[in-house]
Length: 340
Image (cartoon, rainbow, N blue to C red):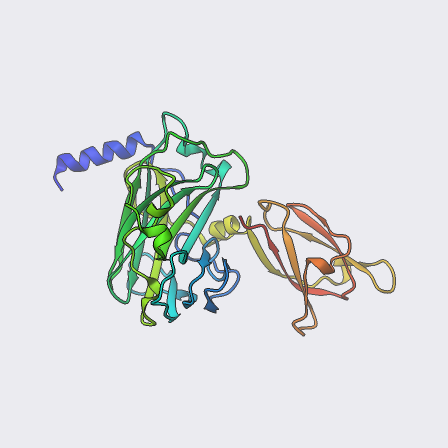
């Protein structure tokens, strides 16, 4: 790159106010936080968050199955963790309506800086590192759930780590709602039937379903198939800057707005006996949660018995605290879920 080109890019970065401050809109991009656990097997029959926080699997119709895990990284400078997907059951007979997506989603109030739906709509640059067991082509889609609008770009995976940089045009149609509900969704398309891939990969925002995943490989084409990803960054503007590393504590706090798992024994001062069969405990969440959460409680005796929300007699749930009446003598572990 010539000196003039370097100066031009630096000017663009300064214009977009990308030097200094918090640049990365994505959560847990370095895959450091995995409150639910580091490995989950037999996946593919249903949607869900299974290991690394803020990364959800979306599945539809395929007989393919896979394992998801948080793994150590030793061959990519600056990163120590990655999210790994490994195909365990192949599916080479692909029905039209099938799909497999890796998703991260965002509240509308957290993406207002994109100025979507205005004449000043901003470009967005998304970068990440990927590798796999063999060459493959997948698609990353920006999806506006408030207005059902899409924009997709393909990217290639090789057997070595590569940083993918994709810049998406601003969309002057359809603003994001300014609330705590799901507005922007990032979809990594890893498997697709013709319903989503039989059209043309559009370079502009659109509403055509067939254009969403055109030209992709199938993650389920072989039980040898793997997919690794880390270093996800989403930032305003057309220039990818170096990955913004945040401390583990900061990343954990951001994730705990959506999901919190804690190990606390509700005994003595935590629990008040109201009668022979009823106890009351108050949980103070470590972060203000996105919305009123659902709560799962596990018996402190270690017998693995789970007490879901239907067992909570009169829970007064809020985003910062929950008052729980339950017949169990004490509680050891609880999880609070307010995911998008």
